[in-house]
Length: 135
Image (cartoon, rainbow, N blue to C red; front, side, top):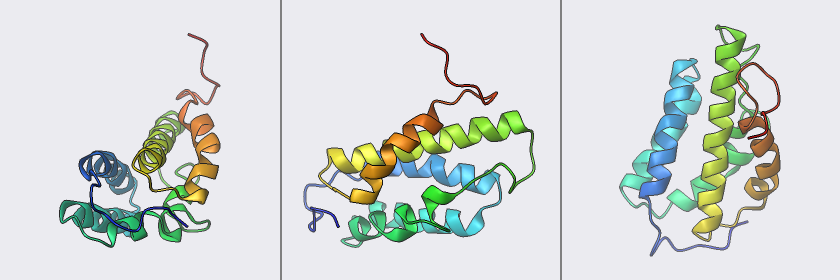
């Protein structure tokens, strides 16, 4: 499932910096169960818990129905479509950062890696729903 079983040498700070705004978006839109799960990951990272890698690589994070990666704002919460599209793009960007950090630190989780392409597309959608403009 992942290549790192030991947490020795793991730099937790980048994970904490990604997980906190992820939790804030969940709280903003009322996804309290999801936010509680992310809070527990933040706590594990702050305590350098050996369970952090297992939980970060779990189906709760990267699985299908009900997982963190499966969370959809539009159609599930109140707000303008423009705001929800922007928040969904930010959420995808944060998940992509999380997956990239996992790879960078040697936590090779196949599901996270396979979702990176989809997350890149979602993260780069403009707030009005159009594809990103060429820069």
